[in-house]
Image 1 (tube, rainbow, N blue to C red):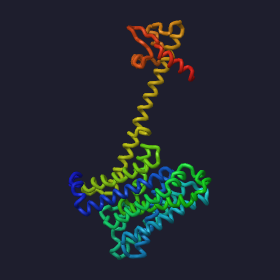
Image 2: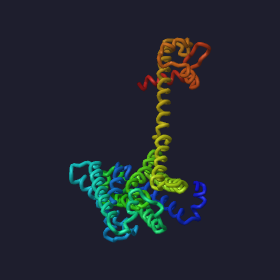
Image 3: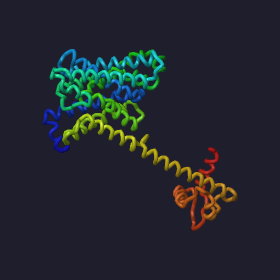
Image 4: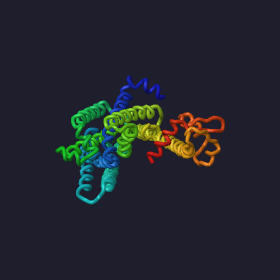
Length: 370
């Protein structure tokens, strides 16, 4: 099945429709909430929480003995929240920095989770098969109730975001100022963190523990390159995340032996790559173009100043001078002389040049600025 056939079947085939809708909603909510993690400089938080959720999945199975998705994700949510509060506790009550606390919780919880999974796999109960899918995700296991749950959480996230938009925005950019206004910054911070944990837990079944942080951060990192406005960034991150989910699912379904989660992450990485290269404000390409333009303009200005120094020695500023005089100036090129002629800074006749009134004014202003 090719991609074109996939999109023709997506509205009629239950499985394809469910998986596509689920990954699109997951990408959108991850993009929205990932924007807060990126702007708060907590990029490792997603990685730590997703790994911290693994022992919760294993313990939920050991307690219930079933692989009910809701119960397993509930265990992952509890475990992820515990890991999050451990991180906060280590940062506030010890001298450890945030990256150290994140690394400790990530490795400790993930190691404990892998230990529990190994123990479960060795049990005679055959019901434990498939728990390892939560490591890398398996989008094919999504059913309608999973997509409904994602949609409900996304709706709740949007409502909370609209209700606390002003508080979220102020807290992101100036936490101290938020306190002076009388807002409960602790409550707002916990609210943001809770929804980030919730989004990560929802994505474990689709993308998996290992790759979930990329799903959270890649759309937001891509969106950050295109705008300085928070609302626009969140909207773009949601769009990038949704498209990553849809196209990643399509590519995975159109090829054999391609896991959906890793492909979605790779598509999101393509959005990041394109944004880093081609975004007008921060893109590498446009930065390089601006650098070349600035260097060219600086060369023109330096050449104009040199010509001004020559011209001001005459009573008539428009007195013609031989072009070969400019050969003594290191920044002079034939191209720069032609460019100055186009800007009406100089007039060229044969092998002579003369400064125009506009050129004189510009050169004089350059001296004033210096």
